[in-house]
Image 1 (tube, one colour):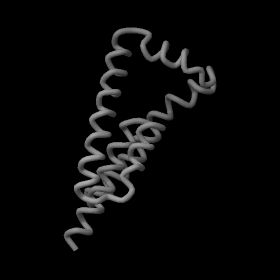
Image 2 (cartoon, helix red, strand yellow; image 1 turned 120 degrees about the vertical axis):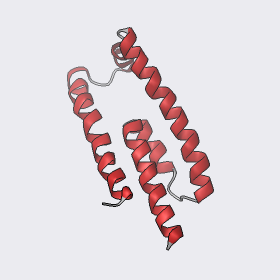
Image 3 (spheres, one colour; image 1 turned 180 degrees about the vertical axis):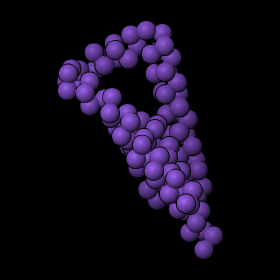
Amino acid sequence: MKTRHVYLVLCILGFLLPYWQFVPWVAEHGIPLRVFVHDLFANRIGGFFAMDVLVSALVLFVFVSTEGRRLEIGSRWLPIVATLFVGVSLGLPLFLYLREGELDRAKA
């Protein structure tokens, strides 16, 4: 299996696993941002994970911007949108999938 296909499988998992937790929460609470933030930072371990993910997302945005520009990846906006709507768990493997495709095209 090509590395690119592994990244595609990880994209699917990166979408399904977070939403497996998020959809029932939204079904119970709706989408009140205040409740979301309160639940996210309900304790220090939740805050730890939230801050870790936020910093990871920022690092991913910088990586997508610089590496995407360097390799001239045309749809580099897509991982940014995926990160904003799902999270790093989708945005990172999606960018790596796009990057591998570009590297494969450059080799050919």
